[in-house]
Length: 296
Image 1 (cartoon, helix red, strand yellow):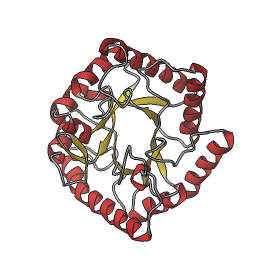
Image 2: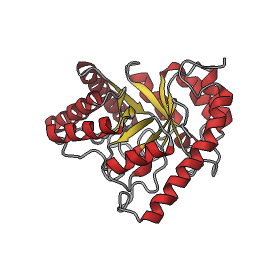
Image 3: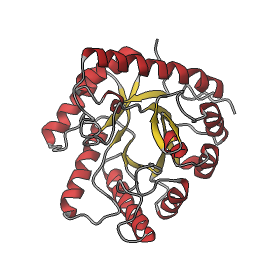
Image 4: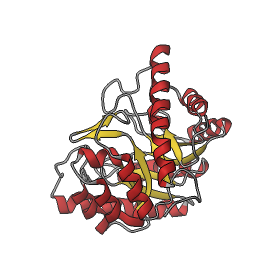
């Protein structure tokens, strides 16, 4: 089965594999598009030491796989905390942007602050710091011919709910668009339809997984994310972006990227295939499965 062109799969879902093997499994399942994971400790598909040789190697691997890249999920440190070495942070950002441009991805996605709800200074100051860093990153991205997006709600991070995301959006240029992860919205106890409506055309991309309040890591169909309602809300605001299954087996743990057995690999393939088959009819019903086709 080949899945619709607006439904992709994050390589974070294959964090247990080296990038070439991950891409082989993505293609074998029938996906035409990926998000590339570049989050140290969550997904090691992009080397942290991203020199010219590493950029070329990652770009060549993706080109050999013949697959599109929607975005690169990266991290350049806690944006609400002043960098101990600003030059090193900027260099890392520039190299991620170079990679993003080299593989033809639409944008580099950055987080919404540190892995802590508590601000380093005050909430106002911290959110302003994140917004400033995103604005600077967005300007650099334009110089590289690409963009920066932000995952504006992340249940573990500074901007963990809709209220804080609204604060961030008020302070961030509209050119830095938002990635909406439905699971993080539900984990925070917020209403997905209300968030979709509030963000409007700021939403650039959507991550799919399931959640219950307080837990954003449930398998698709195993939580409280109402995909039908979410897709209807997105269709109602004219959403034209993509959808990516982001289904890590583990995250933010010491063994998140541990090498797995063949049995585990087969189990993950089956789980991701089942998730995609669950999602596709709902995207089709909402008119959101294919580019240029939408029921309004």
